[in-house]
Length: 266
Image (cartoon, rainbow, N blue to C red):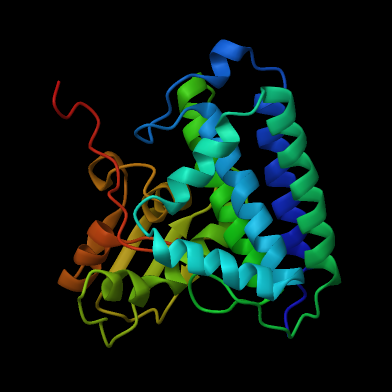
């Protein structure tokens, strides 16, 4: 059984990196629009605080989490937006305090969770390690929206390996959520890690006919739908792999709308 400690450590590091970006923002910067339609920088941080709280409930109070699921089912179209809107309306200092406190509470709960336990979620139940990976993915993805809004260029780290793994594991989910049958054969995935001297991150059989290659950063931007495929240096070989790159998503829920290509509509 895998030790969840490394991914929990990486989740904390991801949160701390984003915290450094937003800690000293002005009121005007908190109100800047991000690439997510209708969401400001404040909405992005509020969403992370809200989902961290939901994760904490899943780990520590499953009856309360079940009530949150009922709310989501009753308002599937705006449940997430409503949560972000409520948090974004708080003063920046309060929002930051809520997010920081929630991150610490979630860290403590993840470290205390039995490694073999399964916890409920809006999608399939997850282990503590899987939940930490999902939280890291969300923190990185929404952090990318914040960075884009502020004009900050982030240096990619090897923490991306957790997002890559999620993106690979959710291949069949991506097909299913679009009403498509999942490919029977495994794909070969070969990605260049951020570390220039690192070995490629690989998944699947070496002789697979369907293949995806390119930078790990670009793959993470694709599966979190933070960039359009046309703007990324990913290559697909085979019709199923090619289709996957059009619909891939590493997050639970209905199909994401994705992002438009750069320059579209100009």
